[in-house]
Length: 80
Image (cartoon, rainbow, N blue to C red; front, side):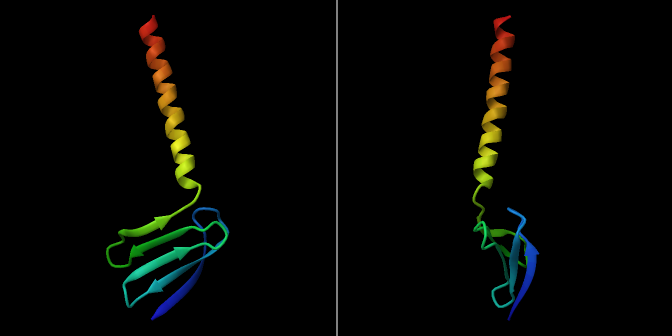
């Protein structure tokens, strides 16, 4: 049996869907606008598969900027 619920996409905020697949004990959350997808186990909550365009690039940029800031502070303190 499959139950479909209308939700807000956790990636872009537009209207998405959450499918509860009771036969396979999976939950599939998807968004047709931004191509977000997350499949998780209903019983354990573990993520089986996930795809969220734009999230990785944003996280990678913020991590790089934090590292470059830390490196420039470290090199400045050693130059004193």
